[in-house]
Image (cartoon, rainbow, N blue to C red; front, side):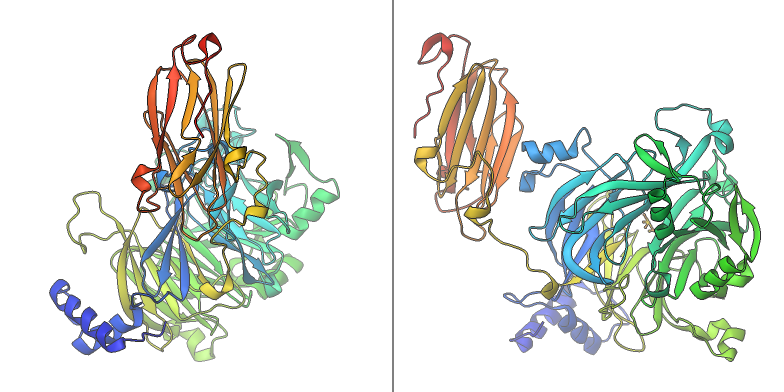
Length: 635
Ligand code: K7E
Ligand code: CUA
């Protein structure tokens, strides 16, 4: 961002700052001015990065700009969204299936050679065991896969491999498998199981399918990440509840001082399936790690861990420990050596447990409630602290002998956040080539730091400049419920289309001129092909009768950016929004007689209000052409 009218911008922001931020004590006027300039994007200018943040139980993905932190658009994924007509037309309705919500936690940008390639964004649904793919070609959801068989609570996902071969997922919950089998939760240890799933991604189209699964003990798998460089082909997840408790987890799952993290060789899993070492369950090849050695290992990690993040070099894997004041740093070379030398400290259900002392590089005393860790690619780690409400910057290994003796020495800086930070994201942290520069803290509580909006409070996000030795808190904004993880993509790394070119529209029901549009009847099937153009529909009258099955295809023939038309049908719960060059279809059964206006819901022109028409639903046997029911329609 290069402000062209910097002085005006500063003056404006400073003026606003003084009237609205009276309580920001401790920030000098000079600092405020500098921070304002750093995050200010003047009218007519654009942000430098996209921030794709998960919308949690709102089921959506939100797009904000960085550094402005302004919300720019909403990408509906797992919930209907009338704003873009999502969940009203046949195609998106079919993708949503019977669900009207999802719980989005971890977006993952597609990668090639461990670099964002700007093609797709994958997100998980914890609630209904699904994964969705958003194409960055048009910023829309194009596939929802699931519910995934043999998988319950798809929280430990969507973690993408360095060439987008797989989306890897682990289950938060365990149930008797296959799904549908019932057992008493008292028999949890014996009857319940968790699962790691490899979701195969088509390298050309991004189309996902369930590749294979690895059966696990009924631990509650938590966060994870995939390897790169030396740890290429591997993936890692923490877990809580290795106690295998089935009730009062708050107490019963926090008994042991250490829980077990999973170290998964997904390449070996893929090979094992190819060699026929899997057994089918609910249509998916399942690997039992007790029978197929080399696929799964466990590592003890300090009490009730949460995040587990591989650094950009692929050498260091950092686990957060919600209930211990340190992050645990695993050394992947040592993990390899322990596996090769069988340096085990026991086993759990036939899965070797690597000896803690043999694989851990150190425990860094970062403070209370470390959750997630991100990296800037310059040897620094940034950990979000849920209890301490801050971000801690610390130095990754290799450490000097003096540092090893006293790891408080590698803790470099802390910046307070407000409040209770969950995830944080550093631009590009999960690739081998982070952009660095910005960190966003996603806080679980905003606790009244905003203008009073009543008891249903938003979450807060804070922008932190990480270019210097010390971190610098720059700006704050409020977000829809509820951001978990996010991804940051450089705007120049993607070129979305703003208009669907006419010749790429392959919809057989698309109509581009008056002569093609119209209404036809076949038995009780009434088919309307409607053309939308500034500022009318062709035809603008559809006749049908009660009992008919009505299908309406609307083509927006505009080829101009931002010339979007809607199609809202009164009292029928229909609102399609059709982008330039797009065709959308809805289908309804007509159950009540009457004249129902339809109208353009998206303000498009000076005569937008005039863009309207009528659906005339005659009683059976009535209407201009008698008993057969008129279809008519004026053109
Ligand atoms: Cu990634 Cu919020 Cu699902 Cu941590 S979880 S905060
Ligand atoms: Cu078309 Cu408003």
